[in-house]
Length: 410
Image: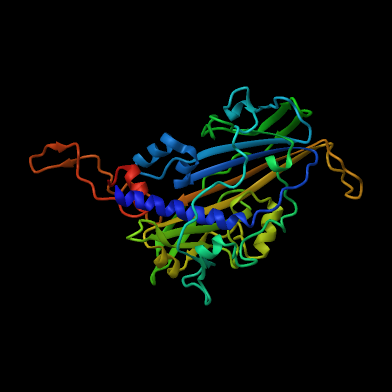
């Protein structure tokens, strides 16, 4: 149990470190404009299905001898420059969405500002690696002391910025006098596994005019990825292609804990980009046009790529505590009223703009992609009787988090 808790602390701290580093790279909120509606549809597989709210269904997938069952998630955001005493909006969806006649968007619960989450700043060092290859290039890793980072000493130009992705816009509380969202409060985050978004959509709010559009795109297929050890200590990350994927981006976070403190002393962050480009918009939603720019720059892998080698130095520095993430950016559908003029020279002042974005992502622990091995429910003794409580090995490292959940270890 102590080993499992220690692994949880390590991974949680590693995630906090990544969030801390990425926060400096986020683009500034855009100024208020027309009514904005953002609809984000995500497909999550692997361990990410559990983190994304797959809950019991994801757990059952593991218990049946495989990875957690993929989940589909939907996030709706509506913002306007006008105000209302009690703002609310209803999104009427196609019947195939399986969410009833409509879902209601409400202001976030009091106390939720959409700002940066609070967390304890980790102590120790962060080792940064980047690029696909069996060995890390000369000059890596870049070492960051968390004590210096807390003092604001972040190397300039290190982390990904959204400044070059000018085709993007945001619908957030920071740039909206009125802002509603779904899920809100206790609403569920996942949608039915068979849900489809194709069809007519209508959004009616008490603080803006109606929004109507017909969607022809749907949730992306789940990503299937695996890792395999290579001679020399590197690890090969491979995945199956997804239709309509515009590009791929992979990253891994790992950590080694200190025996005395019980917390991390050294963390590792690796990215598949050819240059120093971490977090920020790369963990978010990026339009197809933005992805094309990043592919040209070597930041995002092209849609035809199917593998990437994680350097041996990264594997060694991470020990057993590593989580690998892979993201497939997807299509985007844009709507507006009145529509944008064909002649870009003509003035255009839309009453509302709407955007639907898609992506698919997966998370895995190297060596734990398939968890059927060792999951025998019973042991048979010499007498031929069945022991309903077989002895299990102790859980170790980050792998122990998944193994414990699947009943492989304790």
